[in-house]
Amino acid sequence: MASSVMPTPRRMAAGDSGSAAISVVGLRKSYGDKTVLDGIDLRIPAGSVFALLGPNGAGKTTAVKILSTLITADGGQAQVAGRDLSADPQAVRAAIGVTGQFSAVDGLITGEENMLLMADLHHLPKREGRRVTAELLERFDLTEAAKKPASTYSGGMKRRLDIAMTLVGDPRIIFLDEPTTGLDPRSRHNMWQIIRELVSDGVTVFLTTQYLEEADELADRIAVLNDGKIAAEGTAEELKRLIPGGHVRLRFSDPATYENAATALRETQRDDEALILQVPSDGSQRELRSLLDWLDATGIEADELTVHTPDLDDVFFALTGGAGVPHQTKEDVR
Ligand code: ADP
Image (cartoon, rainbow, N blue to C red; front, side, top):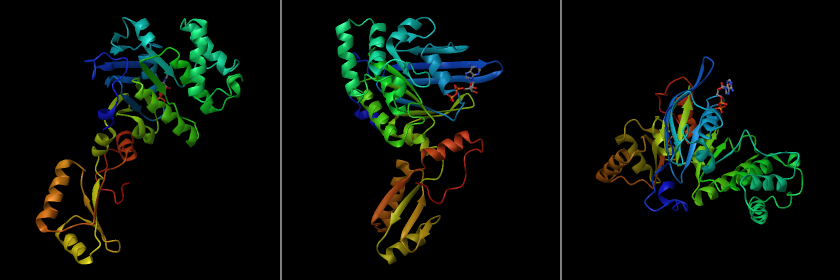
């Protein structure tokens, strides 16, 4: 899993590893009689990427706004960077960066001026501010556009400037609220690369997204927000195992072996032309072992064995579609 190969965060003291960058218990927020967050619990380890996934209007931005001290919760407790959100919002603010829907980019001034303004806000000495600005503009491929008004930037450039501005303060935790919504595929991949680099620098990333693919690509852990509650939480693989639809695909080159296996394995979907059998399976170690043991015991040798777990789309729609978890194994799950 990604977490096991993650470098030790540079600003964490030894022995701190595994500590929570963000922990939340029973977070609640309503607007009038509309309950947006109905008791949310989260624990996000330092140095990891966490994705809060939910459909439009699920309350993702509300959660980010609360955790980044922009608005207050109605109930619950939260610690961010080891500080209590309600008791010590100043300290939380000093440790975090926020970008996204409420971007800090001022379109009337240039990208460079936006950066220098940020350096001033963080009380960096002038020379240091210029150095950091030049370095970050370079890193985010904005040097050429640095002297142009930010209003002339493309969507992708604005997002990059927004993140660059956030990094002036050297935050340990970054909230990215729908960082790729509205971006073209190339800019989206670009942004994913930026996020991966942030994490390899030891930053904890709290990401909100409507895109399953994005959560799957980036996040160590994913929580699905639906109806004000966390409908499910886990790694992408854990979430995929929550719903049926997985199977093991056995491909044969010898028709006789294929026929033997097909006869012996009941509940199997056959593709007689391609000599492929699909055996329903949740993809767990236990089920795989029992299938492999059975193949060994019967002397049947498949030429290829692949495990197909349902993708996050299946999970997401099962959890948020309101139709409940599908009970039928799907014919083709990729
Ligand atoms: P998401 O980010 O998942 O799209 P939001 O957190 O922006 O969702 O919004 C969740 C719900 O809260 C929506 O129904 C939205 O209309 C409502 N909401 C958000 N902010 C306010 C506000 N300031 N006043 C009233 N309702 C709000």
